Length: 278
Image (tube, rainbow, N blue to C red; front, side):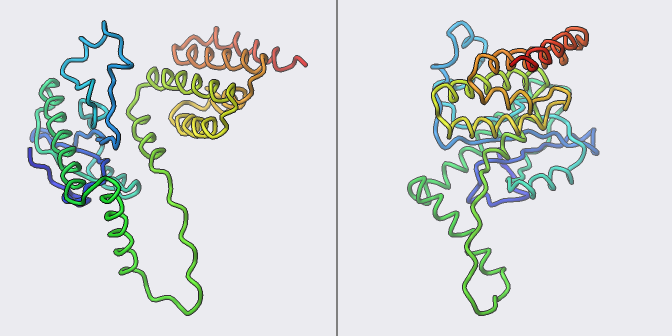
C-alpha cells in the first residue's frame, strides 16, 4: 500500500501518526485512526488467556510492534481538524487512500494494511540510519538543525538553556483515551488504580507519580461529576480508610456511567460518612 504524507517525512517517520481515509460518496467526511509503532516489541501471549487468544483473529500476539486505535477508522468532522491536531501534537498526518464506509471488515483490513506499511517505513528508516539509538540521534540532530536555521540571529550574550523535552507518551494517551468508550475508560481507570496502589504500597514514588499523571490525563476524558481528582487523592494514600474511599469512588463512577443515580447517591452518602470519621 502506498501512503501519502501530508505532514511529516516518509523517509523519517515519527512512529506515531494520524491515518485517514476518504470515501467517494461522503466528500465532507474523513475517516481516521491513530497509528503507533512500538520501540519495543510486545509478546501479548504472556497476558492473554489461551481461551481468549482464538477470538483475536490474526492479531500477531507474539510479535506486536504496531497497531491502530480504533482498529476501524472512525468518521471525524473535517480534514482541517486532523491537520490542526497533527500540528499541535507533532504527529505524522498520513493519507491511506479511499475506502467504502459500509464495509466494516474491509475498512479494518485496509487500516491494518496501512499500519503495516507505516511500520515498514519506520523500520526502514531505522535500518538506513543504523541502530535505533543512532536513528533517533540522527532525527533529533536534523530537527535541531532545522530549528537553528529558522531561528533569527540572537543578540550577544549567553544562549538560554534549552527547555526540557516534553513527554510525548501523555500526548499519545490523550488520543487513545479520546477514542475509547466510557466503559473502556473506566476499565482503564481501574487498571491504572491497581498499578497506583501497588506502587504506593511498595513506596515506589516514581511509578506512583507516573501513573498519577496518566490518571490525570484520563480524567480529562471523563465527566467532572465522576470526581476522578478526589479518587486519585485518596488512592495515593495506603491507609485502610483511603482504600475504602477509593473503592466507593470507583464504584460510584461505574454507577453514574450506568445511569443508576440512586445507587450513586447512596455511595456518595457513604463517602461523606466515611470522610467525616476521624
